[in-house]
Image (cartoon, rainbow, N blue to C red):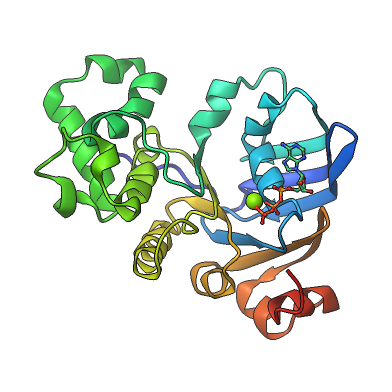
Length: 263
Ligand SMILES: Nc1ncnc2c1ncn2[C@@H]1O[C@H](COP(=O)(O)OP(=O)(O)OP(=O)(O)O)[C@@H](O)[C@H]1O
Ligand SMILES: [Mg+2]
């Protein structure tokens, strides 16, 4: 399978002057943010500060809510996500998303992997079985799940453990070759051992994919990301290299959060 193309000079995500309202409630205030390509960036901050909102604005999933209003712009690899010429299908093809609870489709393991490809690539619908088998195998290998499921690819995905389901949910994004993966607390439903396994996997994907990951887990942010963004009450307070943020935070508010003084 061809690897996604990379251009390290262009930011993966460039958020400019983003304000977002749910009805009358303003959830994001003048967010400006550049997420570097090919790295893992974690998004941290207390509950309700707007992490999921920002993530959901990046792939337009937030637009499902009719009462959401957005001002400002978000470019993903140089393309304005909200430009009328940029169709939502195209946006979703470039940007994969992983949620808190694994949400495999009510299909077999194999069909979960092939679903996105069949949706986005008309050639895939006619591709020979051997070619599709190769896609299935390589996607499952990339998430370190192949050995566990290779003998039961036709079993329903729901029979897998939560850990395996979450890995599958990551694997099924890969055949479409997204350039950006958004992950909203992907380990929050997992036990510590499964969390460690999924974190290891996310780390493995670094470089090949750009990952923007929301986490409440400071240890995870510290271990699994190269850059870190701290948000508070709908604003970006600080964006630094992860090592710097945890050792010498620029803002007192960041220090308070990291040291567990609130939320
Ligand atoms: N669908 C919605 N309708 C109205 N308000 C919402 C909606 N979703 C979120 N909000 C509000 O927007 C603010 C930001 O919420 P968001 O879910 O983005 O925070 P978060 O940082 O992801 O929190 P958590 O860590 O608890 O997941 C909160 O005040 C929340 O109540
Ligand atoms: Mg959230």
